[in-house]
Image 1 (cartoon, one colour):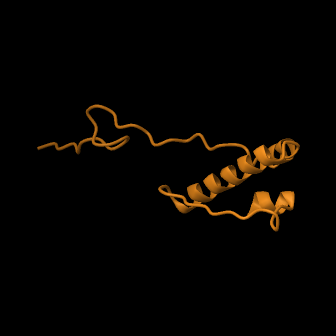
Image 2 (cartoon, rainbow, N blue to C red):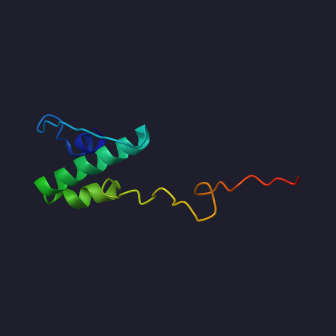
Image 3 (tube, rainbow, N blue to C red):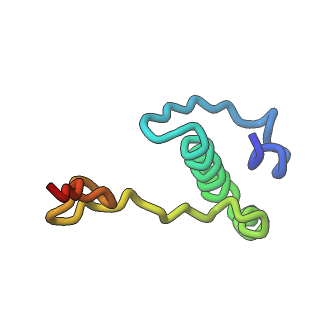
Length: 82
């Protein structure tokens, strides 16, 4: 609701949102970005306003890949002395 409240579009726009995957915080960030992008395309002057509140910034962190010889991204095989 943050992009809608800041732009005062709460009573003007009806939204139906479906999000799949990720955690709760990732989903909320995704919803914020989607609403902000939709509002920016709907009303062009809002783009600068939304940028000042960092609502058009995407989180670029991704899942780290599995490395060869390891069990996962960080976890390696268990070292046994005997």
